[in-house]
Length: 276
Length: 339
Image (cartoon, rainbow over all chains, first blue to last red; front, side, top):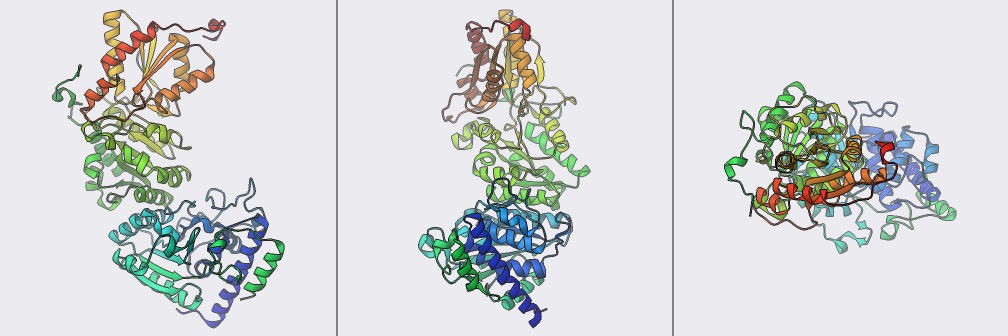
């Protein structure tokens, strides 16, 4: 069912708040993977507030849907989403990166409630997500598994190992998003290691592949609903995004893969994001 | 090379003529009937590792990932997170090295209930050569926190390890051979306990600590030394090298004062290192030697020839024991107080 205008407005406002919170945490923590967190916010907001069957009060509920952040360096974005969703107090975000904190650059599922897989090293999350999808099949559960991978991460061979296996095992309960924000640490993805034609690659690997504007919340919602309804195998939603989305001085700049923000920059960034 | 046996004398085994791998395959499929949570994973080695026996019986709970070990270990983590108990089987070289980080980060870091059956350990895949020998695996995986590391002496002990690893939550690495090794036991020893060494032969002159295929040779060497040299040689089967049975090591130090470790593995980082750590921390004087592969890549050849080459077979152990018995070492003054 398409989003109502009211829902759309609420989700957009929420996405803006999440982005402002990410900027705040980046300021408090001394540095975070801000660019690639901002690029995937709209996907996360739709998942956590619309499509994931989860209950923050029961993070270990066995019949919940699973979410795996394969691009685990987006930990700051994921942590902000989990806190806003109520998995742990917003106050915890103030300890991000600190010794003894439950939250750090790459989230540890043993410490941070709501994290279904501890990720960080590239090319691991999709493999784990595949295992969860197969596990649901063995257990005859209708669990859906959602996974966000990065475009830089797609250089890893293990991504394609998992892609091959998911298609082979025809896992309709596995939905992946590719946060195609076009930048990795060393620069523009096509300069560092050519990925295109990405959509063709995923199709050739046997995934039902849809290209979508990763910041068009209505279009993204439609794509997710299509993916959920698709019953023939895994679905890849190739989300065209902007690294650093929402913050004018960060957008489409590889330098903002990871960075710190002064109080002044935090204020400017939040102003740029606005209320949504 | 000396000491080479005819190939038939090495094709062993128990009454049912099953090799270690075959026993493992049968045991696992039997366990599968009682435990619907067990799933089997392979990377195009279902036949070679014998996990295929499980797959034939439970096709819905068996996944072949093709030749893609990284994904297999990642997927094993995902399956375990769903509450299942994955048994992942591939060659030791690939489990420990090709999939190294996936075993470490996905499985061990998250402390998941994944059981790894790493076959073709050490030089057991002899003629396949260096690429398929796993002489570093124990060193590598022993450094992974949360992981229990077991090296069963033969097929019967493998059966016990496979059964008993189910009672121990968390990741376990069971390293077995290719299945053409001589058996040590004539039946399953039901008293097998993970983390508890087995005294195969008592002795007071020296202790040989072995694991995997070298247990057989240590026992044989002990018999030869008793007969020909009149020596009392204790043999410990240290099937669990992590956590190691410190008490058994310390008893050997106190009671025999001379220890020889023997492993089908590089002398760096495996059984010998684990034993040396215990001895060094104790502060006790002890004549000690590690026998294994002396930090070199292993050539191709028949496994029995390679073990002979590196002195990990009966002849090699006998020679090393004689050498170690002649070595002097400084005993600490208050030794008697500690015994």
